[in-house]
Amino acid sequence: MRTLRGTGAQGLTATQDSQTPQIGDVLDSRYRITGVLGSGGMGCVYLAEHISIQRPLALKLLHPEVEDVDEMIKRFEREAFAIGRMDHPNCVNVSDFGKLSDGTFYMVLELLDGVLLFDLLEQETRVDWKRALHIGRHVLSALDYAHDAGIIHRDVKPENVILVQEDGDPDFAKILDFGIAKLLHDEAKPESDTLLLINDAKLTQQGVAIGTPTYIAPEQAYGLPIDGRADLYSLSVMLYEMIAGVPPFDTHDVGALLRMHISERVPRFADVAPDVDVPDAVERLILHGLEKKPDDRIGSAKEYIGRIDKILLGKDGRRSGLREIPPFDIHRIRALLTTRFARVVPQKRPTKRMLAAAIVVIVLTAGLALAFGSTGPDAPAPEEPYAVMSLGHAQANKELSMQALIAYEKALSLDPELANNKRMRANVERMLDKKAPPDVVDAALEFLGTLVSTAGDQTAADQLIDFASSSKVPRRRHKAVKVAEEVGLSDRIDRLDSYTLDLQQGETCPDRKEAVANLRALGSKKAIPALRKARNRPRGGLGRKRVNTNACLRGSANEAIRYLQRL
Image 1 (tube, rainbow, N blue to C red):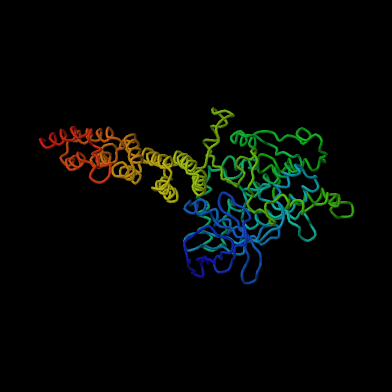
Image 2 (cartoon, rainbow, N blue to C red; image 1 turned 135 degrees about the vertical axis):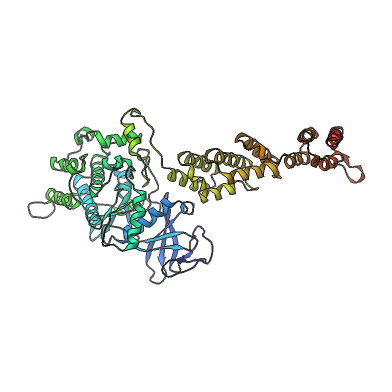
């Protein structure tokens, strides 16, 4: 059994380097890994148990390949901080947060046995409007608590809502994933919290939109300052989708989707789902939540809850219609999952939600303004360089080297400063290992050329020159020479060493004869010892009958030696 220890307030140390946890491993001397629940772009969620009290729990670890991406680490820390402040039955509970001495972050969450709302909608497409409002009320209760605590979720959507059976309610909803939550300033908070808020402000500066496009509020799409009403807009999109079977705005073009949220009228239920019977009061409520301007929208989660209660209240003062909700077959829903426990991080994503994995979509205000003007509806969606870089890390971790290099090159085109990313450097180094496949090495050498040409990277330049001058593998040396010449490093290659290796390793005598000509052209007397040795290169045959396999170049070598001696 391996034991991985953490660091933090207790000052624990690690007993070994970071590795992917295996069944039976113990983390931080307290948590034993017993299974895997799911994996997402930021981390992996494991099934675990607390050793002392034998309580099952969910253990979330940040992926090693994103640990050097500051944005990802800040999101992870922010999620732990935000959930830690959320002591509410409709929020997932976090009981611990730590960091291993090797830098790996982990978070301990309550284990939820249920089904993601996302998976439920995938299976059933729609739910009865009464059931939808009942689920929405649970989410609003969590949002009301979060907003009062100064936390805006910013990514309310079906993937972040899980339904569990609690207190006799089979649709007891809990909200997940505060990874991109906005923490509002609170003067009463201690100084350490204020520091986190300062970091958060840097990540969410004005002009940047963060969220999932299908559910994003107009002010988020603009990259403007937001408050809790942005969450209420997202919640209204989710309610609309639950009842109609489709979100109010749906297109594969992210730019067009953002423009719809900002300027297009919300379709009536009768237009998108004519077979669904929705009371006018329900439609008015949801349309009010989908107003474009925050000031025209429902003002608070508490007000939203009050409106829902008025709709659901019967004459006897109790919520009506809930008994008419079809029974929730928890065992049938569980059968849809890959494990017995809920996938805290959902894995499948339909095409219509091309960015639905709690991905951060960055849209500069100026760029978005252009999208409404000259670029037209088919303008390409902006990409977030850190997300693309993280994709490259994930591909490299799976040994999909070619895909990883493509992602890295794309990330650099978006932000050349990412050339200093340590994880990327380490992955490329592995691709240049002598045991790596030749085509992977070729691609990695070309990537070094990209680093030189796009970022003026001196380290990559030195690596290229080293391969071109002295690599003992002919293919790698020749490829490096070609790439170095293409990026303007030709004059830095040690041609004497490179041609000498060609003379020694050429597969045929004509190949080696070409190396003789190149050495002569250099005009350096330092080449003479290698030329003398090559004249009588004994290879082949046995014993005394060994043959000089360089016979074809002997005359050329002698002539080159005489020429160089005369210089």
